[in-house]
Image 1 (cartoon, rainbow, N blue to C red):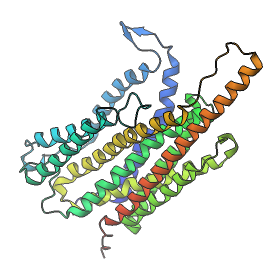
Image 2: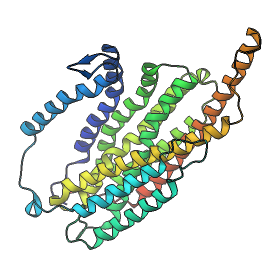
Image 3: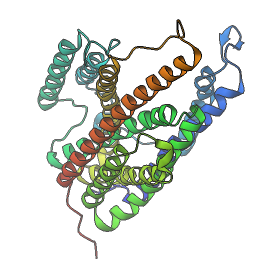
Image 4: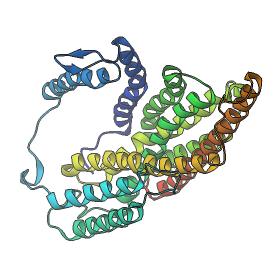
Length: 376
């Protein structure tokens, strides 16, 4: 449809967005170390990790000023005032119920908490009600009337799966570095930087390639490459320090694969919806990605915590009571080795599941719109 941005421009926007993901963990760790925890200003706690959230207030204000001065204005389509409040409430209820059902404060008793199944079922019912409402309501969050539905839904599905893989990586790579490599928070963030830098570079590259080869091919290839990367990550050895440069290579491969998807999904949805709905369509892609991040990390965390508890339930923590120092050291070393083995098994399975999500996304990407014909 007319007015769509070229994929290269969307790739540049995506690269800038992912660059924030690269710098965010590093500047957050640096800020948290500037002022000691417990420091207060005007009676409000501001030291340690709290400073990260305080500093975002002036940054958000500067961003708002930049948007006001730099982004062109315009009249809102469809008269501008009608909002699908009921659809928004149903979608929010579905997400809230699903996340609440997946949150388990006692993972030793099961994957889901006692209220998990009712909440998940209620969330699915709310999601179904949202789908029915959106099909029949005169005012919709994403109006697909007059638009081919399959490519739009495919784009949202690809964005959802890519978002799930992304946040699982952001969480579990740092956990892996801190537990199996014994690194601190800064060291874990530096290990993750390999993945994030590749993600930002590939976001720009994906826009350039999508303009030449089409969104479908680049998105499918990107997720297939990411799946290979996560399979390799799932095969990391227990003695992770002996992996050497393999860690760097595998993280770069996974980052390159996911980064290639950023521009094609935005370009594809803008190409199939009317220009008047580009804003809503772009927002839908971002929302789908955020939903994937939220539900993906919630589901895999619930399963991962339960898996770790089940692998370590038989272990008894050694105590230095009634034994000499040498025997206590031996028992502690044996206990620590078994805990590390359980963590390694948990991470291996989580990254393997992430590879399956990426493979499913690669297949789903085959339903993206075909490559547009070249103009003479």
